Length: 171
Image (cartoon, rainbow, N blue to C red; front, side, top):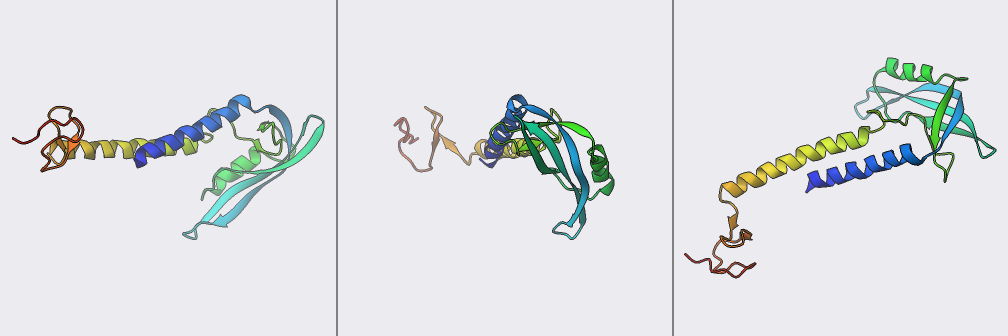
């Protein structure tokens, strides 16, 4: 059940990300601020992220919107590279939510990082579902699960009649 739940979660997140790619309008934006941020994780490892600020215009109204990297890493070089790509003064195409133009995606695209969450959830869902199926098959073939010879549905030991089809079970 956990595996199927993870697969369902992956599906809904992937569908949401796909919806952003297909339905959110594009806008040209200028980076006004860009910096590498630092912090610590629960193991006290130094972690790095990036923060940006974008200026753009939607329907004649100017927006100044902050955004940050969707993940943090212990690699300063990786985050510095991202901050350099989005250096102040550079121009980039953003996707924005037409309902709330302050909600932007600077990294949206058909790439691994944009679909990272559904990829991880989907992979875990496949693994958990596979393990669950394997355990179920092993228990079934080992005789832990008794099946009605008529309808092939599970029955309990000692029952005289199948509760599903009423076939007599006494031998």
